[in-house]
Image 1 (tube, rainbow over the protein chains, first blue to last red):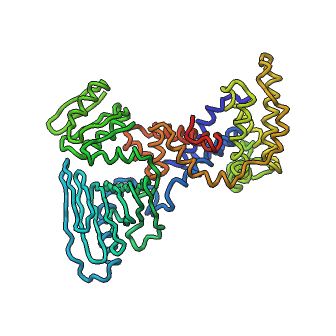
Image 2: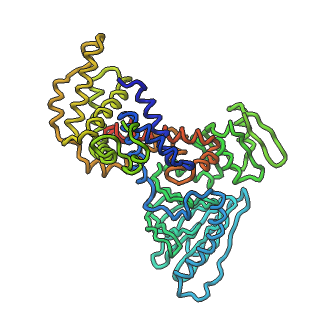
Image 3: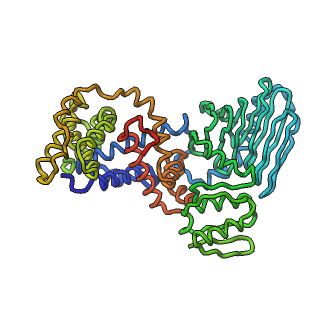
Length: 318
Length: 198
């Protein structure tokens, strides 16, 4: 019956599908795919089946896709754009929203260095814990409480006050507290909002945006990139791991060495560089976030990797 | 089939193949009517065939036969058509393989009953689909899930995903391909109520 097995056909079909949705797909490729599909009904069945599931997964994206501004743009250009416009958008958003204040009082700025952390106790009873290399501005008025997370990561435990909404602005997005604890991490090309308790609202602070506001519940993790916004429900342990830094720990669970190193690099000026071949090894475990040497010793002893110490950085390779 | 068709005429007719039915119509029918039957089909195959290693090939062959037929005219009711195709395929295999043990096909006669059962409620499937997708995503191998999430859900390009994950673009494609195959098996092939198991 079927000469090439179903596995092989399926895997070919999947490769076609992924290529068709990746950069570099051209007219010639499309014709080649058409020919492949025309070769047998088994090819068509496999391809259409995978194409259907691929289409279904769009449901996992949130309700919108931000404008991409001219198709597939390399991230290089997207980062500075996002970083540069974030502040401008944020300010525009606030002035638009708070027309009552002709001259809003100056906000107070708080920040941490690499490896630092700080807990802010605001007058309204709200606590904000700042993680490494983080900068926030806080503005409390009679009508509204606003925090700008300009960079880094912060955990918010908000004292609820219906008369005075609590709003966090970051990367052109607005997170509104609805009585809750949540975490926001603002990296150059990525904004993550994780809700630990209660609910938060999420929308764009750009008045021109036609995006729909979202409401996030406990356990929801939202990720906004210049390309798309996604929301996923995550198990409690995952969130607890992510919040390990509040206890001075980095917690890894099936984390790649490359990601783990990137995580350590957020906290330490001594930088880790992981060679290509070692990058995709995965690790589990909890490490003191400031003790990069403990992590290096482990990779050396357990994974048998080669470690080369420099003055400013350590290279880990196979 | 389509290799007789010149490229220009294929252009003019979209993706149509040399068959009475328009390919996109057949595709739409296949996705709408046949794929939702997959978990039932898999259950049927598992119940009636002992060598589990054959089952994926059977599914593939059944789909190919169903499509070939549909390209000449879409069957009025998908479910009896798919099950009859499956049944005939199994009978054919039993006849062809002389060494098939007697209990390989347990109750093909009972299939007559199954064919007349009402189809799965599509509304239930649709309502459930988001939850099942999330669950399926969580069960992917970590690297596949990571590649899939970055590329498909967060919208990074293949080159960007490769850079972030510290792997080659080719590996990104492989992880993605594996993710798509497994998602399809979980979403279509598994019964809706066994989430989180296996």
